[in-house]
Image (cartoon, rainbow, N blue to C red; front, top):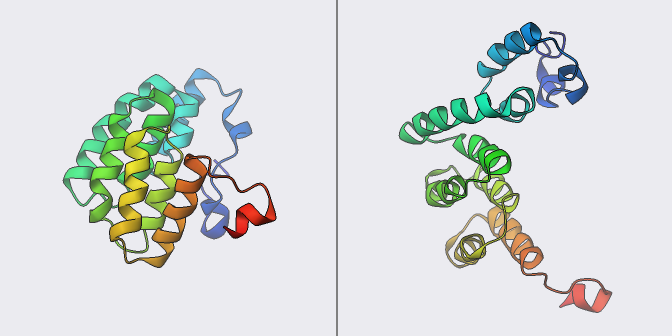
Length: 161
């Protein structure tokens, strides 16, 4: 409850996994209900409490968020990919990318980078490099693309190239 009631930068730091471990069934249920109110920011912790229930809830809320403005849907989508392995949510992040405001786009790129590597992810990073005007997004896409394709960067010469 102490972490739930925090504000400002302390709240932005998120929850401690230790605070969720060892809770009774009743306490987990209460914590789950409280964390639902903070979605999508609390998705990670919902999955830690009850992955199956969190996946079900997150799928429904993800649909609603995409149908509204989708502004923070990428947060849920990233956690759905991580905990369910369902790459349809990676595809949703890619499809919705153009809808995001400029300041959010680099965060979406980072979220996509945290999903499994496949051709869709590589093609997305290339697409961003070709069409994006947001310099922060381009920089992140370039860095993630190079990491994804294992571009050599182990020596100073490699890094310079």
